[in-house]
Amino acid sequence: MLKSVSRAVQLAARLSLSSSAPAVRPAPSLRRSFSRSFWSLSSSGAASGSRPRLLTATRALPTLSCGCGSLHTEGDKAFAEFLTDEIKEEKKIQKNKSLPKMSGGWELELNGTEAKLIRSLSGEKVTITFNVNNSIPPQLEEDPEHAQKSPEDEPEIVSTPNFVVEVTKPGVKSSLVFDCHFPEDETGHGEGEEESDIFAIREVSFQPEGDVEWKETSYTLNTDSLDWALYDHLMDFLADRGVDNTFADELTELSTALEHQEYIKFLEDLSTFVKCK
Image (cartoon, rainbow, N blue to C red; front, top):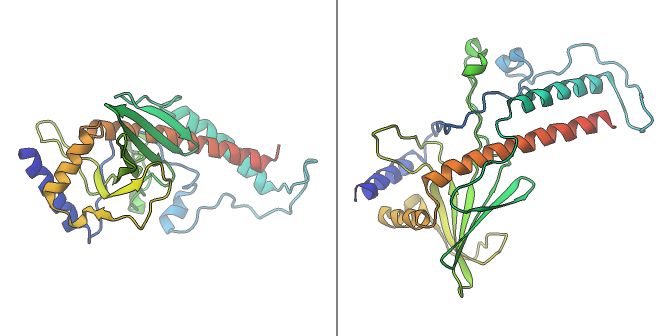
């Protein structure tokens, strides 16, 4: 009963905050202590709100330097050198050379930036789908006077993707589908405090099994104005199938490692493209 009341309070707080600016959700314990210099190359540019500049020297006339038939400039050369250094730095601070394993018997399937976690439980099939694109919450703007930070004080970069839970029962044509996310206004819990949900259900719907696109013609239950008791049962339904706070914590660790892996691959592909080799 206490857990239900706690969730009711959380749901009421979530509804009351939906019309106001969300607070920043503290990141999980996994830390990635760096800020991507690729997007913040100049502290003066960041402080003034202007776009950072790769080069401050006068732009040189383009020159062809190889037989590949592509344009090569002094700017391309500087860009390539920067990318080489950036890739080395990112690999140096990469926490997971291989993707972390999920507990609970989940099988992982990857397709680029999209991941699926599949688990069978007493005849039911539970499928979790998420994509690491756009999964890094934006960093708040800081006072320019305090923009310079030591590596220990750098903000944590943690991937918190939206994810879809699809529960399929044998002999049933439609799957029960949950659209879930990590609310920015949710806070963690310390020792001695009652555990709170670190993820939330946004929508629930019945969808044809295996359909990629969410059919708008199927009734969709939005939880913004949902009875707290029904919402509590929906959360318990997921928890009974292994989708709970422990799962959510491990999901962010997996997503963060996958996002960083894809980011490094993007930098390597970009470097190859700029160098044209």
